[in-house]
Image 1 (tube, rainbow, N blue to C red):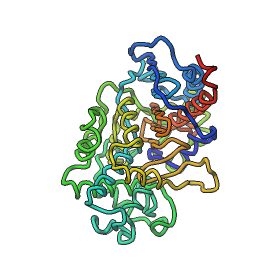
Image 2 (spheres, rainbow, N blue to C red; image 1 turned 45 degrees about the horizontal axis):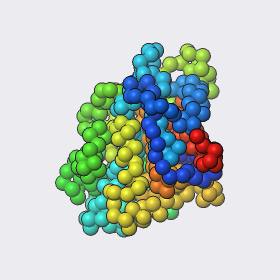
Image 3 (tube, rainbow, N blue to C red; image 1 turned 135 degrees about the horizontal axis):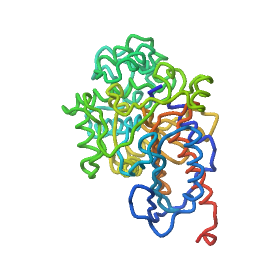
Length: 416
């Protein structure tokens, strides 16, 4: 399915249960690969051990390409894998543009929190104060939209919606069309009583941004988050032109939106067909992603997304008190499991890392930053999910977390 199945995806990121992911503080040298960037004199040990695992994963998941970026106490690593286009040997430039999917939600959430900081709205405000006709709108708060606890139906899980995506991949969606789908379905639960990931929440937040700033959501996000810090290749594209600028790889998807509406995994027969080559993925590089808007249509490059993650989690967009409140707001998706992922105010937590995952046609992204150790992991792949349902960028992040954890356990005197 084209939308992010958040609970499943982030559970896979940390399912290896690496011990606390405790990493020492520090920054080392950058290692680049086939991007044409210069290669430093040595590469981190974790990169040497992670590389064959990543290569095996990409082969097993039939993922055409990936880019990995780590900044850690054990060294920095930037490398691309595979090819930019299936059937060719063209490498992916490490500065390529890619679709970040639901990582976009952190952009929207951060601007909303800035507006809270500026006194233009309150977390306790009801949605009905800003947008009319929202089911339960008088009882749903801004905070519940951010935390995915509104109970509003997720429009992107509608079968009819996904049939339209398959039939009209270049359709430019309006927010009214998306919200009409959501409003015409029953709510999941009363506001605040449970967690349910829903793109509807973040589309509503995007509309609130526009109302309070008098700007388009794209312009408000750019002006507040990216332009001040020189992030020129990170943006929310216009609804009528969501194309990727060069350099950019091709993105691919297995199956159709309808076939994967309930599960990212294809039926066993189709998985077997993918393995033997009789089923091929579809090139979805140029499909219109306006349906995701402020919930998932963002575009970036890997170094810029890493810089954003560091400021998002480490501080710089919000004052200290609101930043602390945001990081403390995380609620576990599986309270009985201390290692389970958590969701916060427009943000997620994976072990000691804060960030988000993203899944959009053709691309899967993992973005995480550990503020205690100043360790950043950003990975992205040119397919959102494998035929068996695995999210390859998230699986790469799991490999990297495990290898970094091992590296942190080596006594300092035993390191080169």
